[in-house]
Image (cartoon, rainbow, N blue to C red):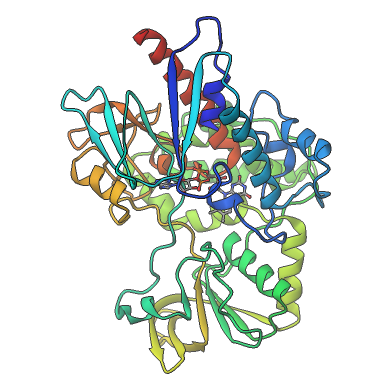
Length: 451
Ligand SMILES: Cc1cc2nc3c(=O)[nH]c(=O)nc-3n(C[C@H](O)[C@H](O)[C@H](O)COP(=O)(O)OP(=O)(O)OC[C@H]3O[C@@H](n4cnc5c(N)ncnc54)[C@H](O)[C@@H]3O)c2cc1C
């Protein structure tokens, strides 16, 4: 999306600039989420909020119509359709030179390191081929990393074929036999994808789902009228989580008295979430993560209604069982995995046995634990600094990286989930396309000043 936005910058004073897009997947554009090859994996955002261009909200919906892609039930399409949309858009940018002089080329390579020049003004990106690309700006758009291991006592399970630590890996569920017992860790959107995938494959073995809060994502309802923002009147001056919670609850009650549900009230917060988060001290942000992040993700990252209904059906039929508790250990025993689950204080852990365990706890955000050579190199050189709450990378408001001395880089930027420390909600397309638009504008200005 950043490449698309760079190609769209004004052509009044043409740039003389190359954009190198480095992507290790065989196709650029769809990334991890939209490379999904299964039609049952749905977008969790309605079509109208998914245009790649914030200024043209109908763009994706029109693309679906023109290309006669699948009909979208309840306004939710498959992720693979969205992947095709992104692939086509980036394909056009790669094929045709942009009228503003920006030339974009794709390197089907993995970036293994970035060396920042001693004056901090340029950087050289190293690729697996051994090639090096010197650049004035390097944007880390690395996406999501597989979930963290759920248990730490005995790590033997990590190497077992029946432990599935990366639910998004290609063919991740292929090893699961149709009658095998399965235990899923987590009840978020990834767990729902796995359940739907297993169901589509004809899996009929028992499935246990373990989660700390024991709640499934709330379901989307048919689109409701937008609720007016109450940020300026009720929230702008609040610096404590408890006060924000109280004000939001009160607003939900007032809306209910007018016959309006909680969903539009929560959705009205979306444009201001970054400001609400930014007004909290580190201690308050930590408090939110400890006590409210779980319920927030239930109400905020909602499930398409057809997915929620399918999960309910699986629960009602007894095929899927939900257990509330925390994973303490996973131990391989013969060809099974024995999972210790702490269900309540003072109770001894329950032992659950399954043939397969799939971790569905969401992406690892802690950049102090990410071990790809690119990230390790930047971290060890002090150019990339994980934030104290381990949500991503320390940046300024434009996404420029802060180094170990707290200085703002003039060459390294990031976009996407890595920017959670600055705005918390930095996950879904509606936020990320705005980041892309703003960063393209910022880089465009800097490029013009250099010319
Ligand atoms: C399973 C899943 C489903 C999701 N569903 C939705 C949804 O329905 N709606 C929504 O709004 N959001 C969804 N999201 C959130 C999603 O992360 C964003 O919408 C968006 O796709 C993120 O884009 P990105 O470019 O930051 O990351 P990605 O699209 O993942 O792109 C990052 C790319 O960087 C490449 N890469 C990483 N390191 C290197 C390297 N060293 N060298 C070369 N290439 C590298 C990776 O191969 C990857 O393709 C989902 C996320 C996941 C994980």
